[in-house]
Length: 172
DNA sequence: CCCTGATTCGC
DNA sequence: GCGAATCAGG
Image (tube, rainbow, N blue to C red; front, side):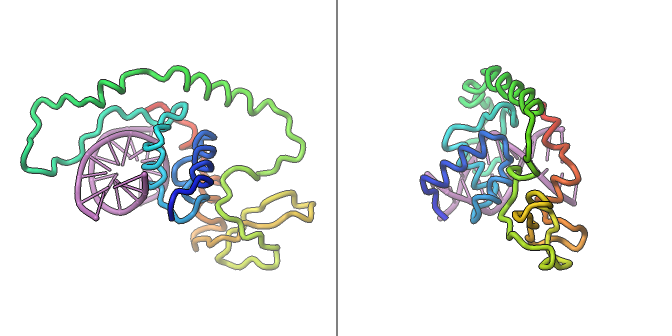
């Protein structure tokens, strides 16, 4: 998979909307979350409101030569600028969302990997039973992606259904 | 153990 | 430029 303009654009959109790298990777398809993160960095849009501000990383020392003693990395110099603007913007966004009165706004638009749009009768023990759309509508269908034996949902919908926590506590 | 993003570095 | 491996952390 190569990064076409459309894919990059979608990446930008989803990233700015606050989706995690793995979720974005799932929607793009054909790429790992690492690929997404790598691309995000190359596009210079890593700071997204308040994802993770992990300052310095070192990794293991690979080369026997060049044993840096006084590690004065340029990265740390360019990194200590607090992104107060991004944090503020994100805060305002969260405050605004719950107030908006939605008429028929189902669970849609969240993550939805690649729904197979199955009808009720098409579900099996291994298909994700996450409902999409209004059950009273003709548009109603199920996710239908492969679900583990351990639950009724696929990997992504199970995450949504059981622990929205990781989305919340962000203050690294 | 699940997940998150960040960084490095061989390709 | 790309992304797997790795790291650091919730």
